[in-house]
Length: 367
Ligand SMILES: [Zn+2]
Image (cartoon, rainbow, N blue to C red; front, top):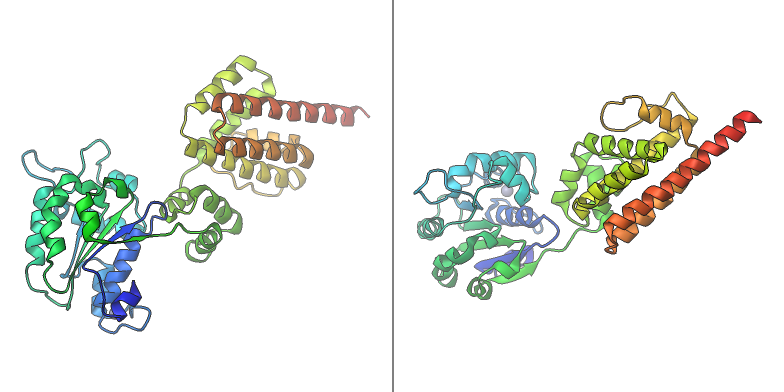
């Protein structure tokens, strides 16, 4: 994109197709900043001039942003303008927002969201005016799939834009973009972020440790936005659930155990993946504590004593067996195994390992 600016050939309408990385908006803003920077270098904006700072805070008068929103009053069309403060406050927190975060941020989960016709009309009107401070005007449309048919209003603007006006449309769902918009824009695919790059970024920019970074990178599957969400998630509920599961396994309570895994199997695959990877960290912490009780286990949530008892009970070998069994299940779940059967089978394998461990401890204490 930067080559386009330096080569003087900037398409007037760009469609950034960002199915997986969650970085489309950040890319569009970086592009805008480079375009408007008053002291731009060959490959990057200066980051310090007044234009750069205004773009970064999204208060540059020549930068316009639209995103999905809902009607604040019945009878009035939805408009991004009503949510601009909210938008800026979310962007203060993360450069890589996703739709769910945005909805939670504006209490929009149960609302009907869109980018309305009336908003499209005002985009065209605004872009028809002269620029204020920059030589360029930029209109970013975040999640352009929410335009729906309203996108038709933009066609003329995309086709015969006023000079030095640029549209940057970001979409996660290119199939929902009107073909007429598609054909009038130059599209670019935003690549998913590789696991190694993502994990290094989490370490250097987000202060994660190596283990957490690798785990999060694996779970996020190339999506930076989801990576941040997972990293900051409160996992104490998951821990409680795992402890409940372990207790049922240890008690040999077959029917409650089956009900338990049946319930787990109704959850979303992404959640299960996250949950099971979390159990691996739990086991690792227990193993360290097993050999050194002065160690403070890094397990979220308050301990009710279960984790300490469990850690004293299992040794390295048992832990290793459980680790392997859980990893195997993760592998099967990725390949669309039947969740009910897979999770119950995992319960039985874990039960076998814990039974062996009980026997081992009895033999050790009687000899
Ligand atoms: Zn600058």
